Image (cartoon, rainbow, N blue to C red; front, side, top):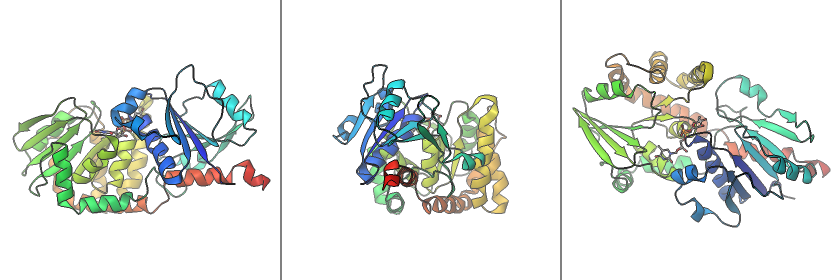
Length: 369
Ligand code: TRH
């Protein structure tokens, strides 16, 4: 018997778009590429609608999005139940899993981090105290021994085709009111938290030796501002399946959180990450863990300055005047390292593949023969 045939994903939106962004992406991939019956339970459909405005049109009998509220009716558990980001499953969901007599593979999908300790915890089971159900921690990550990263089939080819086709890029730009590709301009996408030192970044860009254009999504209306050599395009949010094209058509991508951070790495272009701030500076440890891995893909001379650029972007206040001039001067070198890093990621199996392999190997039906 094929296992699994069905997957349920539970997602609570803590804030912003990353929680639902990750869960939606995984749900779609499991339904589309593995023909599994998938239900995505989410407590905030408004956030989903913001990144996937036509989500209901994409639903079908085998792919459903369900509003997760206090009255949730959940009589039958799927073969695999994914509890995203420790969202705490309600008692009726746990009861339904118990009702499947140990057949359900229960996965606790954690946030992405490059910290070493997660490798030791990835795949570790724990026993639910009152029911005896087994729950397994699944840590996404950047190495072969982690849970991997979410990545759809054919992404590498699609990206390369688009990046190699200026006409395709220009058609896409036209559809989103962005200026045509011009090799005299450096184009930057910018998606960051308010705490990033954006004012000094813009000051630097406006005095750079060649013209720069910044594409800033997530505004209600379209608006262009000019400051010296700098043009700032404030544009509305693009749908999630179009966001990659924005990253692929830019020379540099400033991203944040989790999902856009991963997509920028897979874009194979230089990027800077604005990490989600956590209490007690825990995020700075995560940032360093990532830089230890990522910067190793760059030449020895670049590593230190690149790491410093990431750190400055994650500090409030002014950045040293003209810091970003130096960053832009080194773009061709940074491009090579970004390509090496993205190749390293594309060489590994993706998260859905690893998750389903785990589920197959750990279901009791297999052991029953
Ligand atoms: O929005 P984020 O900051 O989300 C999160 C959450 O805050 C979460 O609680 C936190 O734990 C996590 O970060 C680390 O950043 P993220 O993860 O990049 O998610 C943004 C999503 O929005 C991603 O799926 C891409 C999508 N997006 C679009 O679809 N269109 C757009 O125009 C843009 C800018 C983003």
